[in-house]
Image 1: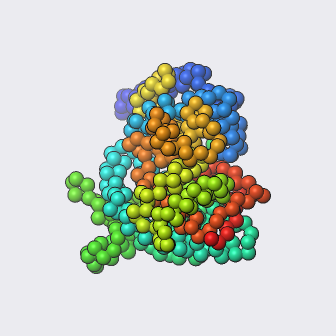
Image 2 (image 1 turned 90 degrees about the vertical axis):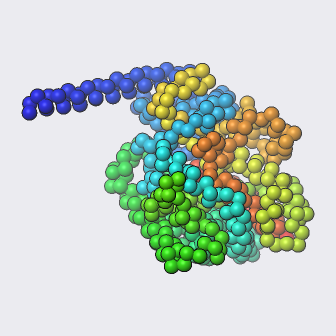
Image 3 (image 1 turned 60 degrees about the vertical axis):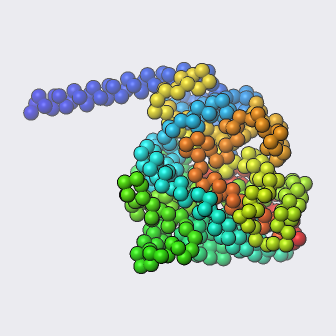
Length: 499
């Protein structure tokens, strides 16, 4: 027995030594690289760069200062003294990450790991074989034949949105539109995902799902910059952690009840799928891989929670900033309005064919997403060494692609802070690197729902701009800040005048 214990102890000791040596070799290499790339700011021996800013608003302000001053291609940010993230901010460096199939980081300090208790192992955070299988199965959900009937849903959601905007603006004062638009995009997601009409826009902020998603987003975002809360068991002991767990349980139960009802409905009436449009849940419930194996209820819940989180928050961000830009730049508002009048005539509803026949609206939205990219960045962890800009980054290194920084890089874009949709005209963008504009990420892990999002944005903007003239409020400053996605710190206020 003594000999066996000695062997076990020796094996454990050898494993620990091996891990320590590997870490030290890795740490030595990343420290060497960090000295030849651009730092985001002065580095503290323990806190790294966390002392340089208190929140993500200050973080992005610092990033833009570094961009303008140094025009870097890679920026290093130390979360603590042992945990660097190398942020690629130029298409020559982002290309390497985008072209790979490297996984999302899942260590306890990763934002992806921190939202797993909420959205589960869906496409956003899963890796490896599971991600590959589910990506193949879910691709069908975003085929054009599936997306086409959703245009009717976008129009019906827009009907309720216009009623709310008209009611809010009837006294002639400027109104805050970010939260109102967020309710509309959540309404869209629930109808397209579950065929669920829960009167979300009529209930407004009192709807329990709306409150849950909003509060969980805030709690998760605030946790990121607090190293002592990176351990989930520690976070769960705090008041914020307990509230996060409570809200996550509610969201899970909400999705599970809809999934169970759909399975029962399909068992009772197998012809149900032929009687209406296919929604996201239909496709998840009926999807089979090459072995005839479908998704479990847990897999389906994870994908539904991911779809609702990614789909409504990001689209509400893009739409809200689009409305802001229509107000801020009235000349472009008039250009888009004139195009829509010409294409749609006396029709109220937007039709599927209109989506491809409004190039000026498309240019406008592209510039909105460049300047106000809903998802500021994406992260990967290297499983094999990667050479980027002459430096070989070792396996185990966390790499980030800062989408918003890439969209403002002065070596890539002229007049980065000027709103110029014409920069996307073919004559002006013919030689532009395809990795210079990536609002939906790029490569094998790009956003699977980007066509869904763009279609929804086109329909809603078309309906809003033909119903109201949108006027800028000079007394309200709409300040971008990040809370998982790009938001407006004090909301977005505009005046709405009936057309």
